[in-house]
Image (cartoon, rainbow, N blue to C red; front, top):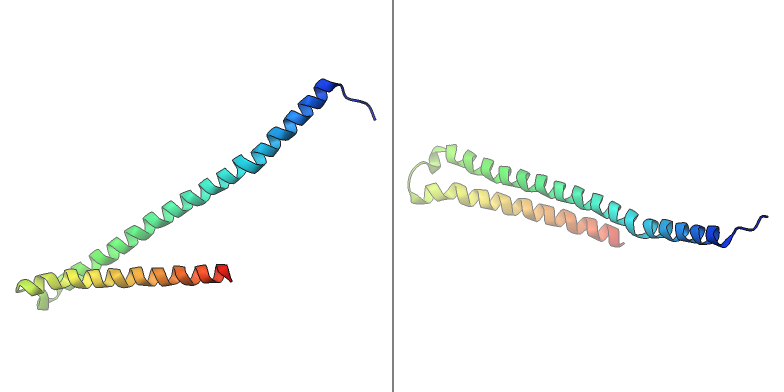
Length: 105
């Protein structure tokens, strides 16, 4: 086995330290960034879906003749849309809670 000169030894150690630092810091940060991006995209799509669900519920209720006259009748579709949105949020919360319980156990 041939001996390396001290300069080659220092360069090898430097390369090992740089590779280790990349492995332990840069790569996990890239993975974290990927998860963060997917999470933000998913939450934006979820927000739009829930928003359009509430809007569709409100517009559907406004088409019924029952809600065409009177002050309470004009507010009822908004209340029903809020109720539907609250139910959707509750369903999402319960689903997330169950998923967290599965992960913990």
